[in-house]
Structures are given as structure tokens and as C-alpha cells.
Image 1: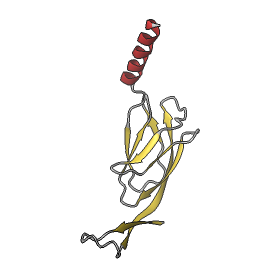
Image 2: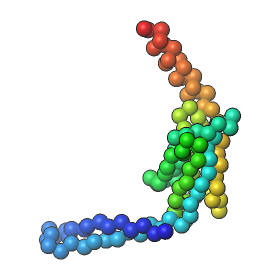
Image 3: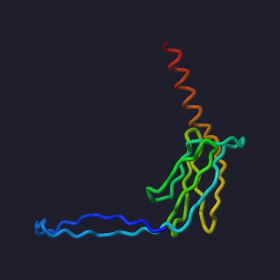
Image 4: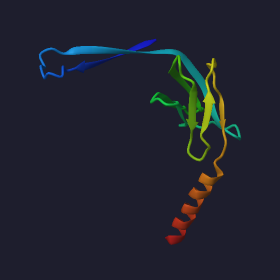
Length: 122
């Protein structure tokens, strides 16, 4: 699939009578699908899946599943979810990428400490 983006360009001379539409083509050659789970196998709904170095991304559905159209030259997916370690996965020739995220104990401890302090102040 090829997507076209149109962008009006105004000449530097300031003559706005002549506008040129420039079309940029970005080829999305493959679709990556997969599932994001925690270490215990539970689905992680709302996890973020992004093509590294781009703004191309999506979030997982209620079953932790995602589908993402990526440029043919995409190399790495970055998967993240609150309370879990960020994971980078090399795409290569894969079209199915299943990822298990590990708990980020430091983040979970920080959230717990803040919650306890706040509750103690009430």
C-alpha cells in the first residue's frame, strides 16, 4: 500500500498566485501482527507498539493484540507499558511478533511508595 501526502508549497518570491502541490509517497510494505503479554501470560491492553525512530505506532487491544503497517525498511519495534520494562524487538523478516514484557520492579516500588505516603497524609 502506498500513501500519498499533499503539501502546498508557496514560492519564496512571495507570489502566491502559483502554488505547487508536492506529493510525498511513503510505502508501507508489510503488516506486523502480534500479542503483548506480561510474564504471567496475561494480556496487556493499551501497550504501545512503535516503529523505532518514527511516529508510526499503535496500541494493543483488550486481548493484548496489535496490527501495524510498517515501512519495508523498518528495523525495530519498541514496546512499552506502564509498570513494565521497555522492550526492543528486531523485526527482520518477521510478520508476527509476540512479546513478553518483564515487570519493572523499580517503577512498581516508586508507585507503591507514593501511594502509601499519600494515604498516610489523609
